[in-house]
Length: 110
Image 1: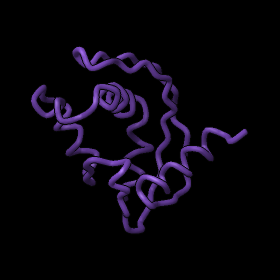
Image 2: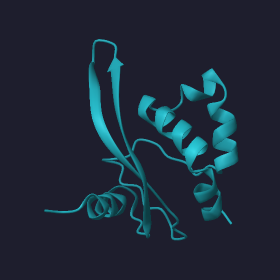
Image 3: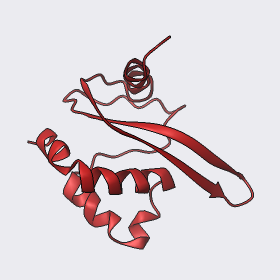
Image 4: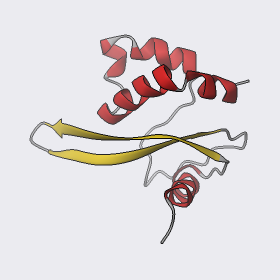
């Protein structure tokens, strides 16, 4: 059976064409309702890592992406209008990352 870290590394490669060393941060569970179209109820493992190589987006997996510095992302997350740009699970995830793991995130940006 494939480990969660190995599966995460495989999906990074499949979706973004990147590879890097990962650090496990935490797990969380969420439930999000999407009007009448359905819902998600998932257990997510959160990792961080740094990759300096080019990103090769798999358009069958990723609709849109951008790189944003952590401090800019935090500013965006502080307004309701900007929060709406992100998936509900990412808003929950980022709040915890910024609160509990900010030094680890900032260490990757230097």
